[in-house]
Length: 348
Image (tube, rainbow, N blue to C red):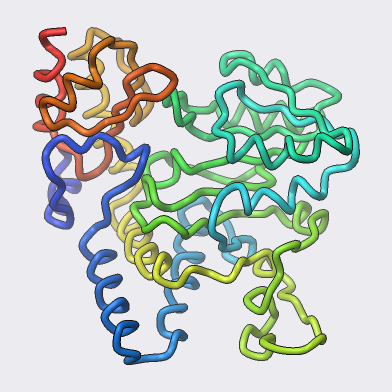
């Protein structure tokens, strides 16, 4: 653990053996305490909702800084699939969408449901994805880090290949934002749910839409919160939507964003580069203990029959995805967690 990571370690108190951030992240104390405060206020009606909603603005601005975007191009929502829906609806009939063959379905089904109007989803193997970006593909939909395998996307190569043929590029960053440095240059949409590596409550999704994509999409889920002035958009038939990406906002789940804002700001304070180094150091210690070469991902996927049962017996919490063990390491993970996991596996 780096000295910087060590200085923040007291902000979490995980039970030993939590190696499952790819399923959900653990809240830092600032996020947890902020959430307890507003829940107490809610219980007795101590305040109106406006102070809670300040966290939505803070989350939007923090996310924009983390991905190198202007906050005017960031929208808020609830889930990745709901955020993708307006983009999918804007595709012309007969459009072809390229996905990774192991892509998480929140970035597959929103395209497939348009099959009745000829939208075709084409799958390529992870290691063949870039070469599959060829004329005829209208949109590439892919994760920055694959959920099941932990494979890190060569984003620069995908951006270049998509640009060469004029295809739109939509990136699901749910398994990347918070530990992997990200930049939206050349990307048309980048969407992340915050309950994994961004360590927020489930229900807060943030996304970037490029100006050119904003112009192509209709804000299908527009409601009062998408208004230019939310406080004058409560009633009636006069619609004045926000001029920027806010017109794609879904009305936020307040308490989810109350927990999200301090967590995102803490990630900024620690630094994604520091978190990245910490996570990869631990992941590679684990890989070395399994006799695997070093990798570039905070997610380790390995074919180890009996690992799930061995982990359960030792109190290690990880996951099985695609029939393979999946262990994931984040800023609150320690070398003790690595050793606990390796010791659990040593007899199998």
